[in-house]
Length: 277
Image (cartoon, rainbow, N blue to C red; front, side, top):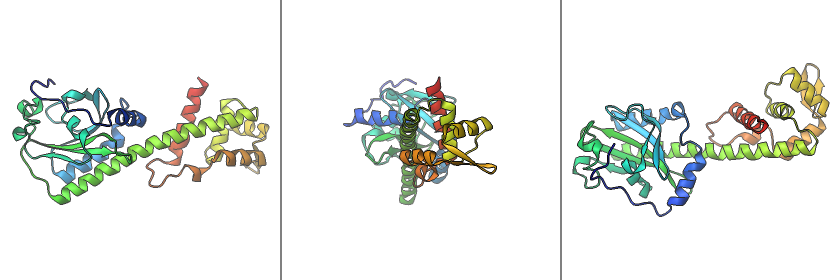
């Protein structure tokens, strides 16, 4: 894609902090399409358009989290930021709605407007964090001019807000996981329990997850658990450690969180595997 006479947008006043917020999501360059397809599907349906897409923008590129492009960009996962329409939507937290790109001074010379597939209508809704940083956009595209009703705009703003909240909550959750993981490892090391397998088994028991025979034996040997018939329960020492680190299913539940406890446990185990290697 070449920008020809298309003029790039100026940088937002909070660009450095905005880019930091984008990086904090951990989503740039990752395979998360299935997670965000629901947003573009709903967006496309509410707007009544043939194309919808969403992505984040850092200092250099727009990375698509989900898209259903028609006639262009098929299979493309990212484009240079200066070639995007969405760069202009980073300057405000309000939707950027253009009924006819061909008649708009900002976009009329863009290659997607002047050439195939000849985009005409475009609406970019910013993904705004609670701190007011625009991470990216979720957009609607049509090949003919159109207007949007106030009800459509309100609903689409709601979709964008929900997606932004989901992204921010996932970033918060990952940071919490990293802190919990580090705390557990430090606490176990303080108790002279340093192997990752025992740490994994301990976390599994705290989260009521499955524990294999070896893990059970390690926990009992370390004094962190006791046999109760056919089951296993935390010992007094194990409960003290769990309480001190704020572990347990309730500690991981975040209001309206889209992530299940099992996913959190898997993520923490992955962090421990990385630490082990």
